[in-house]
Length: 188
Image (cartoon, rainbow, N blue to C red; front, side):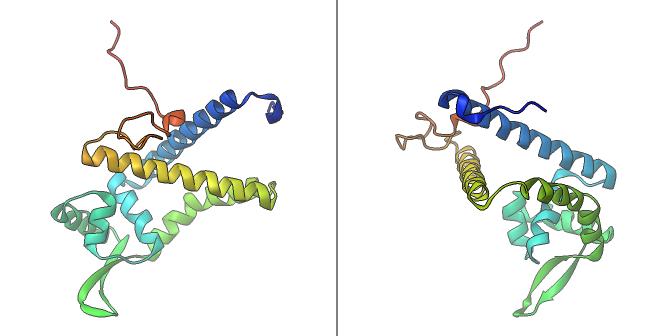
């Protein structure tokens, strides 16, 4: 591995390098999720649902919002996951009229066997950094997630891009440093 003294890189190049690394991280995460899906026979929506449920049991309407599916599609998704033993439905202890979807031990085992291994390796990597560096990473990742969520909302509501520094949709975007240009026509 080549070590680069970060203080020797001019700021624009450093910002560009961070942007490229964020893109590579996103691509790597997507590839990992796809491989987990392939190994366990789960499609991206099913994996997203299980990830969402790993935080807490949820009602179907919350799953529909998170996974961006219609209520009918979420019912079918939950039915498939329930038949395979990944989730179960149970009455909400706070309101017996509501039903919560909850992950099972099988989901926990899948997560431990796949994502748990990455989490362990990641914890070892992070242990090399001090508190101040980790705080910067937390701030950076929080900001990148916020930018992604703004971009998702922009695409969903038709503006196609988050508001730029000038506050106008599609105006000079403050997320440009990790965006990709739109694909051009294929060359023959």
